[in-house]
Length: 163
Image (cartoon, rainbow, N blue to C red; front, side):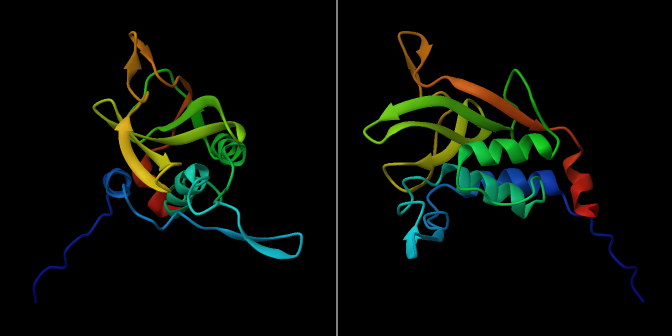
């Protein structure tokens, strides 16, 4: 009888691969709620999906408690789930960009750092996650969009599979 193989899940490797492969997926476009008695897509066909994208991936890996449709809710859950602010991005860290004002008013944005100055976050215009420069490039030597906070999961990723 052949010896049984020992299989050990590599959670961090799987997590990073999922982040990189999430670009262009349309699975984070919609989340429905009843608003004033009416069924409503609160993510507006993907234009408001950044927090839903980030929190859904993190919840799948049990790195936060649940999914969120707002940056504030997702950040609160990050902090309550053991994520800590760090100064420099690490592959897999969560980025929160400064508030930006557009025709709908001010809003924050979040995504993931995937290495080599790249991030993946939801594109408001496209309605799905895209890979882009982690500060959206530079203008006159300064980031186009300043990163307000960088969060890192402080526990060993591979221990979460034992939770």
